[in-house]
Length: 251
Image 1 (cartoon, helix red, strand yellow):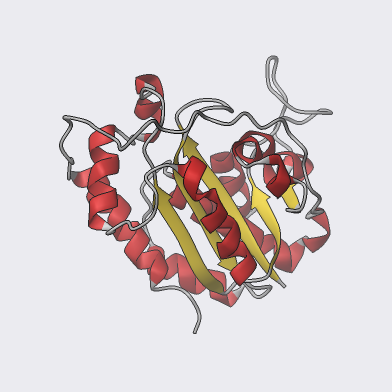
Image 2 (tube, rainbow, N blue to C red):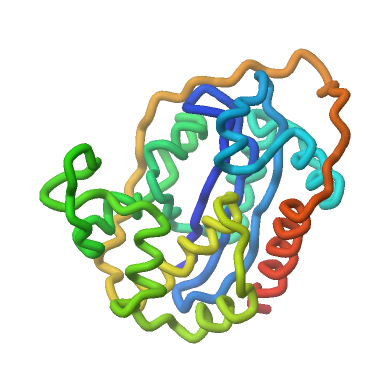
């Protein structure tokens, strides 16, 4: 049984562009099988507020695409079938997403209808048991955990679950991660799911979601910009994480 984790960095809410799409496929023992990690340009103006959140400025996107010798479309709206083909290639039976109702809305409804997924944000609420303060989102008496909160409880803290050997090896191989880019978030989510497969497999109940999909406008022509690629510590760390994760897959 092969599963995948998925995370997007985007240029806004549903109906805007995906800037990076990352997915890690692994088997029931936690062995990483393959990695999908691609970067895209938006078809609308950059949301500079969000670049302060995920760090993917136009210059950094151009630099990473150039360093990875990207031979795919510069726009996710044209490239999403490649992500689906990646999952099909590995016979993925379910995809885990933290806040699935956000990320899945960036995939066409035809994909949503046939892709079983599980939202770890909602599904881990009772296990993480974080007190619900006024204004917190979540059902019942506990709030929905952020990804970092779930990682600290289930992977890092005194209540951490013991990982399977494959996940322990991957964690040692990858070591430090660059914060809040899609591939780093995918790896943190993989760490959680690998432990759940050992200790709480019954929590993961996969089913398709059906969300409204708003298509970003197709680009009128090739991307034109006066911005130069920007290589810096951020892009070097991102590329190093990509390299280290691609050394993990089992052969």
